[in-house]
Length: 318
Image 1 (cartoon, helix red, strand yellow):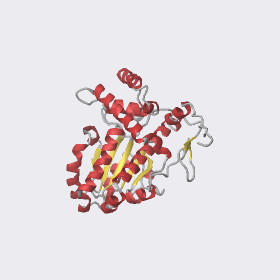
Image 2: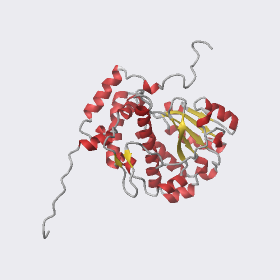
Image 3: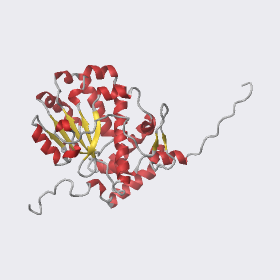
Image 4: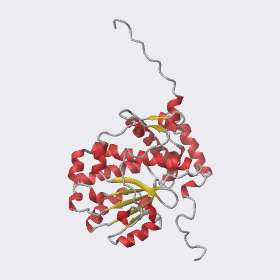
């Protein structure tokens, strides 16, 4: 192998773990200072802030202005929609979300990044429509919050604070057909993609699309313009050759981490949202979960820093 040849995936540290450049450090400080009075700036991790800085570094014509704009829009959204509370509150009818939308965090890649699987071909559009777009979006946001929290935990618990904020994503299109081509289904997928693009940028390391039929490729021609060009460059479109697909995936994911149904050796059950457990959250049966007192999550730290409100005394006869 020549010295100029690309090194195998997994032999080098994650790209996101590299130190911030001087210009990145400067923008980091500017963003923190400009939004210092915004509560969701305080609850947003450094990891997420760095994602925004790097995710919009090539945005034209002015990447710095774009980063300020996108970051402010994100923290405004989190405040208005109470996104900080999502990790502590299970969405309405979340069990039904798991039945209707097959989406899993399952195993790790060769660098310790999470791997996600999405079975779009198993979705029944009529069931999804009946379930409701708002519930679908709520379930997806819960998924992304779990995934973001997991990366934050991996960085601190397993990587000695070496930053890790990307993941590998596998979309299985088996079963995808004309019933998935309706405008309502396409609109639902577009809304989910918009959430990821606007509020969770710079998270994708690699996307494998398996069992992609001609029907899906027709849909892809419609939706791909909505995807950032840098993201499109990370996508690997594959057909129905299971052995070839497995070999492609094995460049990024060891076979013992790939599920059996795709030819791997991972026999663990694939489960959806609200099954991941974090060691700094106190899980309550039948009540909202709460942060443990020693949690270092920025959301927990912020809540502990706020002065506690004194209970109001009720006036007699009032």
